[in-house]
Length: 145
Image (cartoon, rainbow, N blue to C red; front, side, top):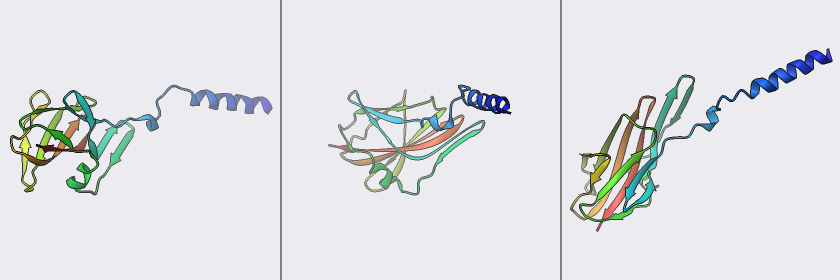
């Protein structure tokens, strides 16, 4: 009887040490803005990721203005360039600009770089990202002097 319990205990311990990664070790993809060779992590809005037997989901009830408030505003130059870096090789990135007058426009990205407006003001940006296994929304804001 003791031998059977010992064998079961040993089997249980060995089964727990299979080397399979725990889903608790999943790391959410980050979005980064590069300005003057400095990296700034964007605020995360919504995020979804699904693989075979794993699903991660973060739903945000806050508006874009509230989300971008989590990001320290970058002081940038008119017409300058920002680079957008997203982890885990997304299949598409769409960038939306929200101006102070609440007008919303799509901003073109070329080689993950965007050109800043030539008009001074405060701008919020929403970055919509899609991967094969998920999607996410990131936000950041800039103040143009």
